[in-house]
Length: 277
Image 1 (cartoon, rainbow, N blue to C red):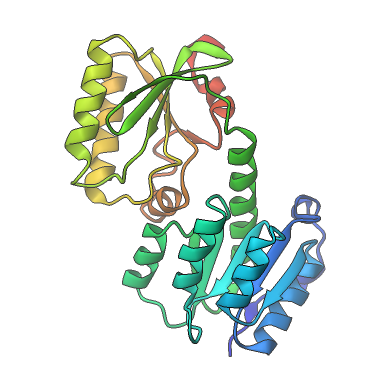
Image 2: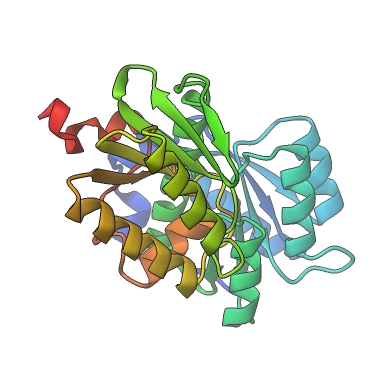
């Protein structure tokens, strides 16, 4: 048994987050009834609509009915674990954010969850402020990505990269990376970027989209660092956008969210580019 760690100010204070949370539907999954009740009561006070499931199979039935905006699930459950639920839920609804929780997790488990595109992995007991912030980020990112699915025009695919011009400003190149950022894709990304640069497909303003990057490690991080350094040295401006859950978590853990200019959407990145200043 565990609890959400909170104080009276967190419980009673009405903040802008409550307005944002209003009517957002959270599915809470745990095999302990007391835990379900505790999370449900807390999140209801914060403006969310909550659904409960005592196991993964029940949760999947709810996901199939398209009744929720986010899944918050325990990791250790009988029959199907939270990881199993994550994988199956994303097959049903590929864009639904899934947040896993565990009091017995190690770094290997957390890394595996992020590789399977969990938005985050929270260690119990959970600070209420951390939980609310994670929910806010997951729901906002999900909402923004859904709203901007078609924000770019058709473009050109080169291996692991899809290159297009931003529909509202053709001077901005949108590069969508479509493989994990690791030692297996590093050379393919470098080759694809070289071809696009040689063919004159890449403009001086680049929105580097990472929504389809399901995994990143130190090799992938070093690739991003080199790319940013090389582009900057030759007069290009680059902004990371549409960060997937695994990329966001990884960069945040290592303190690189402040290093890389990054935004939720291409639209948000316009202020970074010289043409918009």
